[in-house]
Image 1: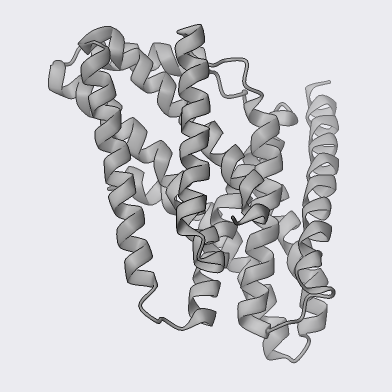
Image 2: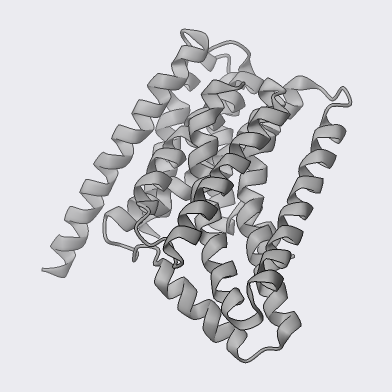
Length: 55
Length: 239
């Protein structure tokens, strides 16, 4: 079951990283700046990828 | 036919089937080809049942935005992991995936076990490697409803890998796995970002679906730049 979950979701750091990306998108959308999210979300994605790659 | 999904789906499935093939090949040397193929077929059957069940359950009129959000987040979970791993490997921070080492490890694991334990290794290996294929098939099919054609693309990748594997009768070590994972990771991150934000904020992407191309280029170029920076940093630390 653990292997099943890890295959689907990745490890805890991966989940935290994606939560940050979604929070950026959701936060800007809630603040009525979804047009900024178009740029901020991919940038956050790349930032999270950099963080995960260094771990 | 869901053409935008073809390449990411085919490449993802190919990489996963190569890894599953290595495990099944290692197991076949202990319990024979027939039993190993039987275990792999059982794993594939479980995946097919899972796909059919998911397709049926998710076609029951659930909220489209909720589904799109879930798919987007799942694709991000998957794409971010693959791209980060590919960048770390390209930068020399992690060793490249080695099919020969995987083969040896599987042989060592089953060398001590009995027939059923070896059968289970092949079944579990096929099922776990195939789970990522299932995830991608489900994600793309929910968007396009092209369940059959997307499933067939995954099967096509399986046939290609099996034919190549049987032809060389060895682990498929010459497949450029990291390069494929890099490209697929970038593509999946693009689809994940696109669908997640579209589910949260509506049609905000400039140019609609055409933004996907820009996103893919962003993640590919950004990923390459990151790999170069990380490689330079690791060399600097080593010196």
